[in-house]
Image (cartoon, rainbow, N blue to C red):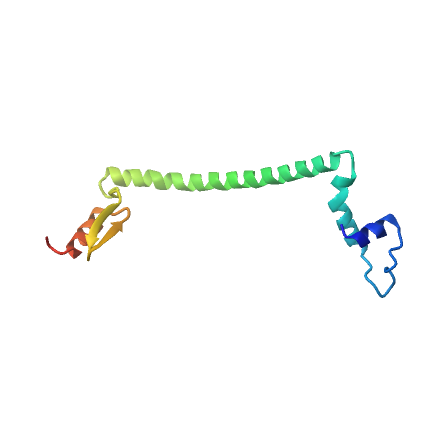
Length: 128
């Protein structure tokens, strides 16, 4: 809290609160007071109530996130089923694990390379 705001809240004359000097508004005084309420009170009910409000807000965020994840999962299930059907029919091939090869004296990594990409990459290599 600002010392001048403390003096104003306590009703003391700070000596500089005339019309030509800083005079805090009621909202500024209230904001400062609310920041210090936990320290000024013996009963911790206010702090516990604020903690409960924070926890409720966090729970609402988590519930919203959970709902979004569930909706995405519902959208993804048909796509995964289609992927399995295409794999079983031989139309879709699984990707090969990461592959390394040398090109112009450097090691090059092909990530998640399909067979066609690997064949094309090997064509670029010089013959041994």
